[in-house]
Length: 253
Ligand SMILES: Nc1ncnc2c1ncn2[C@@H]1O[C@H](COP(=O)(O)OP(=O)(O)OP(=O)(O)O)[C@@H](O)[C@H]1O
Ligand SMILES: [Mg+2]
Image (cartoon, rainbow, N blue to C red; front, side, top):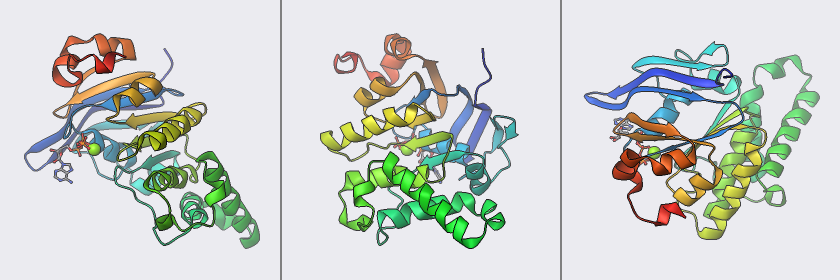
């Protein structure tokens, strides 16, 4: 089997006496959508925070390609090609869509831009911001101030800001949270488009969406991995049904 693009080994995160991520070892294969599901408080967001460098682990290791991410800060991890979106929308409300994506593009380019002349750097940042807007479907909203848009569009913009950093691997924390049916459908379509040329780690409570897009699922409960497998294996797993999916028919459709 090929080397995973990203892997965690015996990863731990404690907050005082609470072990939020407990001995988690997961391999994330390149070019797959790998969903992390589990009940509230299972440790999913904490895991993403460890992968993105927003939080330092208490123990264990994280490897991305040949890099040991364990000691790295969020900025350095973003530079290596890992982008993330947040469970709570994290955009600049008073800025336009283009300006928001501009900030994303600039954050990734800060070091390399030193070698460009200012005009070249400006054009490159603008081009990246425009590519990100197109990918997230907001080109027509380029000059619209973020606060004037619907919640669903703001969530799309959040993904656009992340795309402006031109990441290879996307960490998406509940991209559908709080959305209506139509908005959800649009974002699911966006995730499917992005999955064609990105590796995706997806946290999501909407099981219809998860089972529609995921190649692999990991179920977390109480900070630990309960099971990893393809959608059929996870649906059929009796421990998963007891702990999380329930035995209702709604997930089976
Ligand atoms: N910064 C923190 N300080 C203290 N405890 C925290 C912190 N962040 C998370 N926790 C705790 O760690 C546990 C896991 O939280 P986490 O946010 O990772 O869960 P989650 O699986 O993302 O849940 P949800 O589905 O509700 O988003 C919870 O008990 C939470 O209260
Ligand atoms: Mg969470």
